[in-house]
Length: 357
Image 1 (cartoon, rainbow, N blue to C red):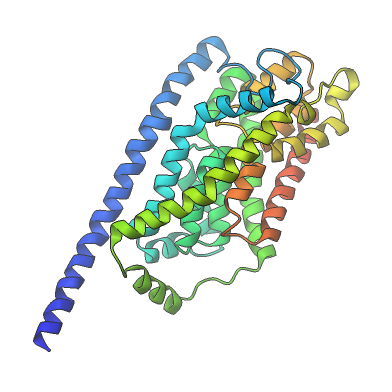
Image 2 (tube, rainbow, N blue to C red; image 1 turned 90 degrees about the horizontal axis):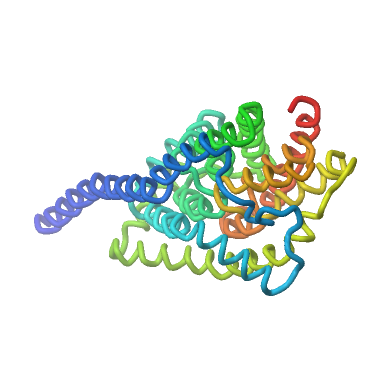
């Protein structure tokens, strides 16, 4: 009996040490990774945006108005350009998404992000701000949060907040497109993040995990070798992420000319254009902040402020790949609701953009 008590005591001490060490490890990976992938490059890019009023060419069409016709060359060209821009963030997203499942105690996530109330949603939206990831790179982290007992509304607020409320993008936007667009993005971004995440959780009728059930889950998770559990989480995330991600990005890259048709004259600032580009923006996939040069290029060829506003809201918020990447942790009807909600807010933003931008 005494030997059993001694063993249990040692296990308790070991678990207590790990409960301190592992979160510190996760924080270190997050801070170092984000500094390398996001914070340092964006600091330099802000000066470029301020001095040149540009952050590069449109990833959709370069310096011209029309995207290349659908072809293998167009598909491969977009795929290579896209993954050249995001691969570091994808790797970081996979690392954080897998680490969060083994390094952060579920009771912590449950306490901070486990409810569907406004305070939990606000915490998740706030936590998304330092990440500044595109929707696809934030998806593995969102999956990790959801698997670690974060609520539906909190997970969606984190997923949507990363690209939509990205402070670096908003600063770039002010220098390149004007500060009216930045303020517009902040206001409508808050509406998008809080509105969709809150309504989606109600629509999904989520059952919040009870404390007793959570305790059993934690006990189950502690079984087995920690490193093995992390590798399993990383492998599962990679399998769920990379193949579909590559295929859908390639297909969307091939279809750029169809998704971004040339709009001239009255059609370039019409309700039709707003609806069309709101749908395009919801489905299409871009790297972080790429909506700015896309819109800048299109506006230089006559695109109106209404369709531009629709693109500025929908292009970063979500995409077909990002919705597919999180399909294992959300009901299908919720993902459809999120996609439709982003498109609707894009249309509303476009109409408001016609009037005030």
